[in-house]
View 1 (tube, rainbow, N blue to C red):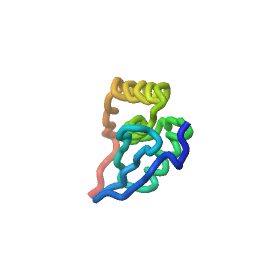
View 2 (view 1 turned 90 degrees about the vertical axis):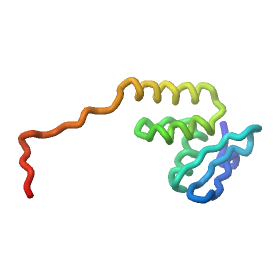
View 3 (view 1 turned 90 degrees about the horizontal axis):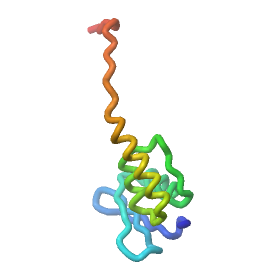
View 4 (view 1 turned 60 degrees about the vertical axis):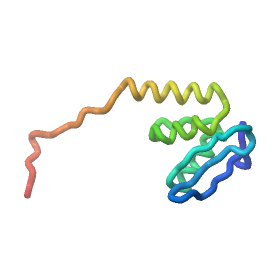
Length: 99
């Protein structure tokens, strides 16, 4: 399992770049906030898959991991989300709009 020392976070023009330094190759991803970067690193280190995370966040965790089981679980979750599709919008017709 990777540790926090295996990741490097550096500032790009308008985002942050998270890179794995312990593995050969270019395993990296870009995120907008430092808080999200820390969350992604923590999840990859502990191999957690938060079900409420955005699909882009899951893709970033998948890119930074080298564990095939972890990547497969993330892929299964993403495929399940694609099969469900978008939620229907609900319009309460009994509610009157006040102007």
